[in-house]
Length: 118
Ligand SMILES: [Zn+2]
Figure 1: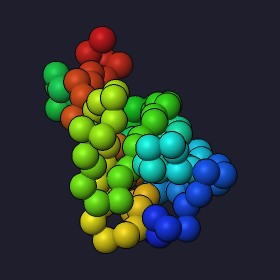
Figure 2: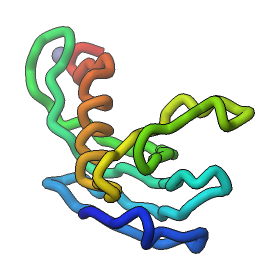
Figure 3: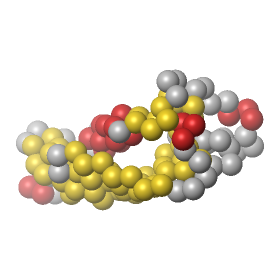
Figure 4: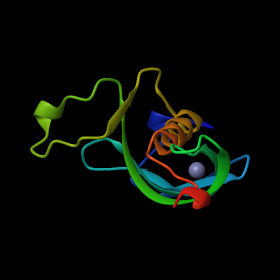
């Protein structure tokens, strides 16, 4: 799902993306810093490799995330508070699928151990 930056305004809009057994849903709007703010949840089940025994197991996922997206390069000098997690897109679109994928990758890269190893 891709949405044009210029079509996103201060009114919150809901979205939902399903991918395999995961659900990425929430809302997005334009905030006062002209960033797109996405408040969302990732819920479902994700196959994950146990860091101890290397077996694949099904991990329950229930994560709340807030993302800030900038249309082009984000210049943090213009804002008094430095926002750490600003994702930059350079083609006038917010790519929700790419955001979802990178969140999944970051969940996968955390340290995980399966039930048998706990
Ligand atoms: Zn294990």
